[in-house]
Length: 622
Image (cartoon, rainbow, N blue to C red; front, side):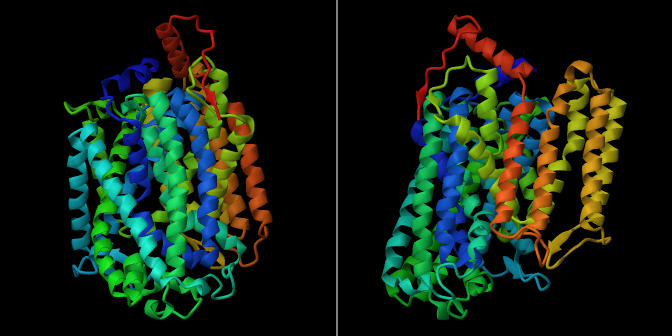
């Protein structure tokens, strides 16, 4: 098992340069987010959403900096799902890896949905408006269209990382040029009064600035920075280039998206949008919602800008497709990483003659297509993807701190200065973004985190922990039935002024049932595992406790369902930050020197021809 971490990536082709890694990250960043998020952000926070983009970028930068050191020290394909296993063992590694898998595998889906949504302007029958919810959904024809597009993503990934890197570089240059031209052209229709319309700069209230970060697509737009991390095992010089590409991509994203938001907000023609002046919240239900920038350009009444809108419709194919292409590769490497950690069958590590994990690639395609059925809309997926992904990023600062204790011998070409302060800040940053996403989103995130535990029982508990096969099989089946029943009779939707579910199950009974099921599951695995392997179960309990603590804070805060929240703004955010700080120190205290990280340290020491206790940590500081 420990040897797999060192041997697995050696079969992957080392073909990516610094520019390739940077462009992979930017290819993930500039996708459907730039086409849709500006309108959703304005609808949530009004003119002050400009601050949301800057603040969101700063928070993501804190997270990226912690991963920059770790990724330079341990460049691995599927990196983010593999680091928690090295710091806390299999239980924590599975919970975070499973959550990350769900978010990574749905991004190609949401990008395909974006292409179909824009195409519906000139190809009738691809979408329809659901009468009950008012949300635009893909029709059966639209779903087939999206599946076909994802199959194209599959074949472009199939022919290898060198082909993917070169193709993505060309596409990303296009992605830089089109948004830049959009900003410049919208200056001809810029109206400064829009920034005070509807009640001033903070027309939607101060709390909305933070909510927009998590729910409107802002964080979703920044999430592509992780591409350089996930492709680290295929870089030519990973220890130097992966940290640089990660940091550069976040800086570039903040600049690009801030200017795009300023241009879009300043260019709004309220009459053309069909909403009253300053009615920010109504933008999301306006005709512009299907194609925000193209609609705005046409609404200016300026011929040049209206002509450019045609080019944007072309970009609506290229930008999301480019991102979907990159993220299908990310999903593949996520499945590959989970297999390396022992959570999925070894077949997922099988490499094709083109140097690609072929079984994992096929699995990513199939699972992504399945998500088109229950969630056939960009707006239905974006909040869940953002919150669940950022939840996995809490491990950046935790991993940095633990690795400095358990792997101090490993060379760090980039060493983060002030890590004692920045690591907990990164954890808090991720925790706050999760909190700001609101109880309605967290309801699904909590269930998504826990519902994968049967896979842990079926694929991991017996071969890795020595749990009897009958016990792991029955435990997984019973737990799956229990959590599905609890979710069904609990809060299927949390909206409005009350907490309601199919069976009218109220908040506290629902939370207690979910928590009890998770703890009983962990307890049974601990009791039946080999005594030498029980530590990883104890090491993962902090994560379950943290998820439920944030869920409870969310329910009583301003982003929850209560008409009169117990925690008022900004004190609710202060409480969420305090809970996250406690969570950080519990996570660090729970980490230990796992057999896998010990094997890696020993292997590096052997290669370097030095004693295991020697230190070669001479990387540059920031």
